[in-house]
Length: 276
Ligand code: G1P
Image 1 (cartoon, helix red, strand yellow):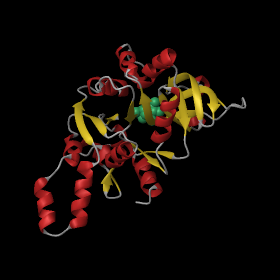
Image 2 (cartoon, helix red, strand yellow):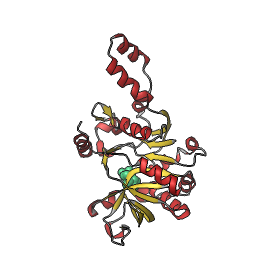
Image 3 (cartoon, helix red, strand yellow):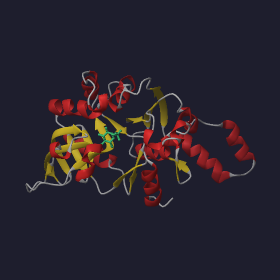
Image 4 (cartoon, protein in one colour):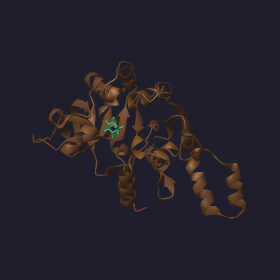
């Protein structure tokens, strides 16, 4: 199955280092963040991957490319552990790349993947600056797809003071941890943010999109029709709301935790959480 990993963008929360080192290439343990994201996708069966990069982020491409000179050096020196680590980085998935020319937003970045996805009935999107602690939700999302044949977004609880930083979902729980969504809003003010309701009818805390999505290719038609939204950007959330109206959309909660490495504090928290 195929996945798109958007990793373009300026990394403004990580300047000045992001001037020269993409935030996706910062280390979590001995691997860059994006290695963990590719490994998560591949482990869930999404091993044909398109990474959306922007100019200046070529070291991502270099990281996943074979390096025969280094490999033969390690081989000759008998450094088999290092050789295996180097080879693992290049063999987890079949990876292609595309450039986002202008920073027009996450929706614009995903739109670039249309040709790559082609006629596949379903594909994943994993944001390249987020890793998952404990477990990936992709397995549960793929299982929900098999049963319900609807696009799915991963959700996690979000404190009221943070809802204006994320995409936020409203909807109703139809079975344990699965919600039929009825409203999706990008970065709403808390008094405009939708809420989820439990199957017993009680109002749940706010829930934000947690950087993992499963889409049908119809999302591309919705993206084509999406004009600039929050912050003047083409918002993936606005296209998702169109798709929801057409086909329905599910939200899934899972026992893990999203670790956003897009800021220094987030990277430190992720390193602690993953014990690296
Ligand atoms: C993006 C999405 C938002 C989502 C967030 C984290 O926002 O637009 O809906 O909740 O990622 O998954 P960004 O962090 O790029 O501002």
